[in-house]
Length: 178
Image (tube, rainbow, N blue to C red; front, side):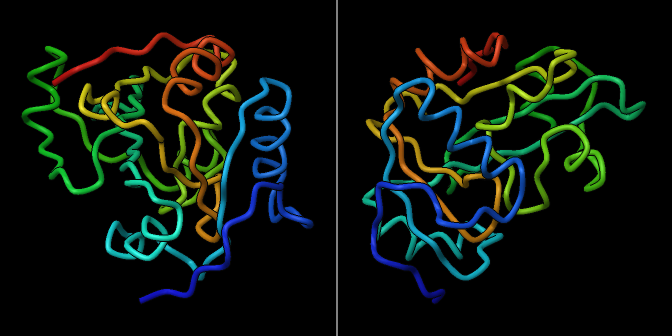
C-alpha cells in the first residue's frame, strides 16, 4: 500500500507542474474548497485505496479516449471500480469505437501524464476539442475524488461544485450517460 500524508486544505508549498499550480488557482478563483493528500505515485485504482480512506471519498476513473483517426476526443469520468468497456461506451454515445488516447496527446491536451488525468484541467482545452462525458453514477457522490493533475497529490471537492462551478467555468458541456 502506498504512503499517504495527513489531510490538508491548502495548496502544495511547491508545485510540480504549471498545470498543478493552475488547478489550485482555478479552485481559489471559483471559491471551491478542497481537501488533499500528498502520496507516493498512484497510477492505478488499486493505488487509490489508501488515498480514498484518508480523504473519505471514492476516487473517480478519468480516461482520455479518441477515435481511430485521433480527431474526436472524449474525457470520460466514471466510478473507479467500474470496468470500462469501449463497445458499451461507443454504443451509448452512438459513435465509432474509441481507444485510449496516446500518452503524448494526454500531455498536450490536458497537461497530464498517464495516471494523473483529471477533469480539473479541462479548462485548458480552449479549442473545445474534448467532449466531457460523465457516468451518471458519479453524480450520486457527495464528494468527487481526483488527482490535481499529478500522480502524487489527490483531492476531494464537492461534486456539486464540480458540476455547477468548474464545468461551466471550463466552457464545456457534459454528456451524462448510464
